[in-house]
Image (cartoon, rainbow, N blue to C red; front, side, top):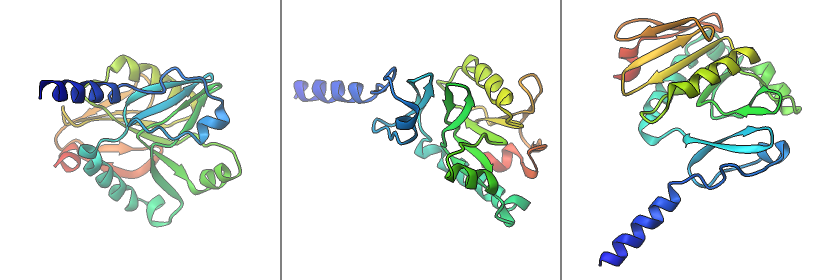
Length: 197
């Protein structure tokens, strides 16, 4: 019985490690790459970088609420844009990031169909307990340099939303503070109380 428990634990530990981290992959192959180990992978100059697991089942309620808010914006109502999960985006030469959620215009989606990968106007990252803010500091610089207008860092544990309009300009929202996606999407707003309830 002890052997079964040990082998089961060892198998789980093996599965909990990113299988493809550091693997060399062409950009073309990355665009069709589907990880089977539950981790999110980003592309950095020909190599895969593993990130904490993809959107977790316990975070789906956040995705649902954010998609509902987007559906009520003028972009959503007029179907001139979409809020999409985990889409590879070119952030700098040689680097593709995979934000948890990102907004693309209908025009960007059409151009992507023709092979022109889009840079989102608005990004939402769901921050887990294990995430380090140093990682997001670097990511924010990249996002804004690429042309992203607004980034939200959503922290379910702290029940906070950090709204960035540049790497240095941030509004920390708690309780009934209104979080806005302006200037990217002026009518995309929600409070942390509404989001985390």
